[in-house]
Every structure is written in structure tokens, then in C-alpha cells.
Length: 241
Image (cartoon, rainbow, N blue to C red; front, top):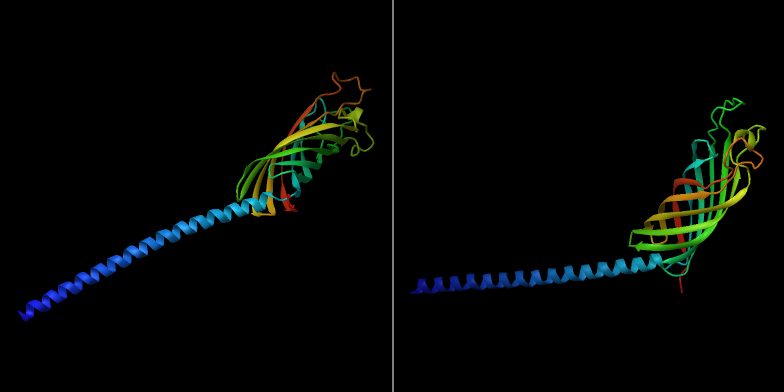
């Protein structure tokens, strides 16, 4: 009888311990799930605050370099050009802004065989001054996409590196100022809410003309369809009130 009582006590103790362990596991599991839910909520709130902080800046300034494929004459091959760019954006709201855009491009015109038999391709350059709207179509914590369309004036210098020869003699565009327009897409990757790297595939339409006194070619003007890409940094500051 005494042994039976001891066995019953042992069984009861084991059952009680099991119940305690099971209850503790249940409480721990519930606590873990609650903590996870709270962590997810905190993370979402933090991301939302970062997005608001990033795209509520009033001003953006940016700059960098790039590449442009440019046609320097009516019947000349396109040439490669290195570029620089600078922009300033005044944001009316987190999506819509007004852009001021300055660019420069430098290359060598591919003039081919001429009566002058030059041993070099003359250096040329273009400078554009444009403005227009920008619209952000995608905005996340680390990435953003915006589109823009700008227009203005382009200053072309096409015979400065020709060692005394003129644009007419080389059949390149006349060195002058003409209208220009450009469209593109900005892809931003945010290091911080106020600092991002930007990659911009862009189209540039210029309207340079040949020398009006040059009658050796047919057409004296057309739209030059030029494609390129710009890469650089963007800094944001100020706040939209």
C-alpha cells in the first residue's frame, strides 16, 4: 500500500510538471507571436516615416557625368561624346516638381574623307540650358522613378577645334544657338533620405543647321535624335510646408 501511494505521487508530480511545461511553452509561443507582430508593425511604421522624410524635401540638386551619341552633320556618322550635367528641382509636392537643367557634351566629329585630308577629327561641343516639369511615378524607401520633359536653348561649337577651317568647309553644323528639348527617366537609389545615386537614360533633340551658304548638300536642317545616359548624385534639402 505504501509503495502504491508513492507511485501515485510520482505520477501526479510528472503530470503536474508536464502541465507547467506545456503552459509555459504556450505562453512563450504567444509572446513570440505578439513580439513578431509588434516588430512587423514597427518596421512598417519606420519605413513609412522614411518614405515621408525622403520625398517631402522641397529642393533637389544633382550633378555628374555621362555619355551621348550625337550626329554632328547632316551626312556625317554619329560620334561618341562625354557629358556633364547639373540639375536643380523645386518640388511643388512629393510628386510634381519644376526642373532647371544644364548639360555639356564633348566629342570629335567624324568628318570622314574631305578635300582637306585632315589627320584628325575636330573637337566639337554642345551646351544646353533647359527647364520643364518632373513627375515622380514610383517612390519606395530605397528606390524611386521619375520622368521629365524639358526644353530650352543649345549652344553648339563645331569649328573651334578645326585649326582655321569653318563649319561650311567641314560640313558640320553651324556654330550657333538653337532650340533643344529632352525627355528622360530618373532611377534613384537612396543611400539616405537626403542623398541618392541617379541613373538617367535620356533623349536629346537638337535643331542645329548647316551653314545657310553651303549649297553642297541638300537639306540644311533637321532634328538630331541623340540618345545617352547620365549618372551622378542627388542631394535633397528643405521641406515642403
